[in-house]
Figure 1 (cartoon, rainbow, N blue to C red):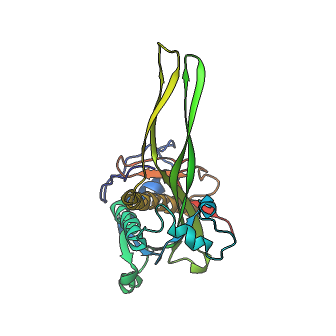
Figure 2: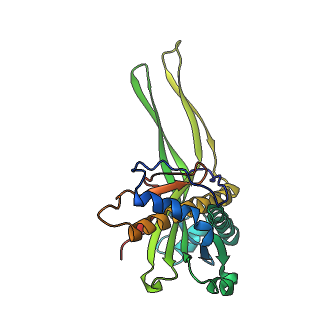
Figure 3: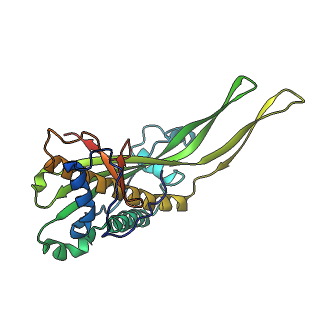
Length: 280
């Protein structure tokens, strides 16, 4: 997962590395969208609680539990993180990262308790409903590997891991709210394994030495902020590309998906660092 974005506040003059001709309508619209973000309002709707799933079902065997209707609750209560995780604090950090980063892109941010002020805006408004956030606790197998004296060695670690799955409904208020699209993103955080293979020249043997930096509950709260910040960037990029789709003639619209770097004020191509559209 990338570190929290370092952003500068608009308005600015946007420089670009776009890979298109200087007179490209696509480029001009992208630059215009970035420069005029401070004229747009975003209403953020947030979930009240987290969905939590403990996928470490082997715990049921150690607890000698078979066919219990409350097994999901039992798995949560015996989880390493989910049972003690404070929903309100996790969500607050997530939304703080999301809202503060969108604001640094230039958007004017409104929360649910500011609905009246938001609805009084004339135009240029978006609604973002963070419809659901789900945490899944599981084990993640990480393989550390190396070639030593022309021989291949590996060591598998079973690391504690938490997936954070998020569902977003994003729409322009001017458009038909019933046609909101649903977007999804998932990121994972794990224990950190730090290991190395060591060749003993005297015995001719290869040893593997390692340390595990265990995932802590407070790190999950920090992770929530970083995710919110990252997904704010995804949201800006989504709105940017939708703007290009709507206003650039299809015959000349570039089929690439652009991201905006507000630190360097440049555009660049996205890979997997974007929302996934969920088809109906």
